[in-house]
Length: 87
Image (tube, rainbow, N blue to C red):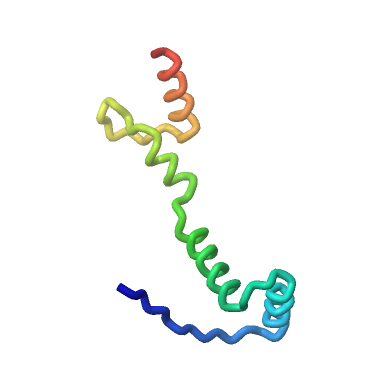
């Protein structure tokens, strides 16, 4: 199975295009590769989960099943560390 590449045309300001050309000359990379890597990196950074979302996924929910508001992440982290030390 062959993946197909899609062509995307972009219009760059002259200063950005000149900076891109200088960077490509200095690194030996093609403009296509630089733009491809830059777009991929930007997408990863923008779509990666936030630190808060990761903390919510890692830290346990209250065990008593109550609907009270959750303690702060910092407090839950401290409680979790204390619980581990007791074991």
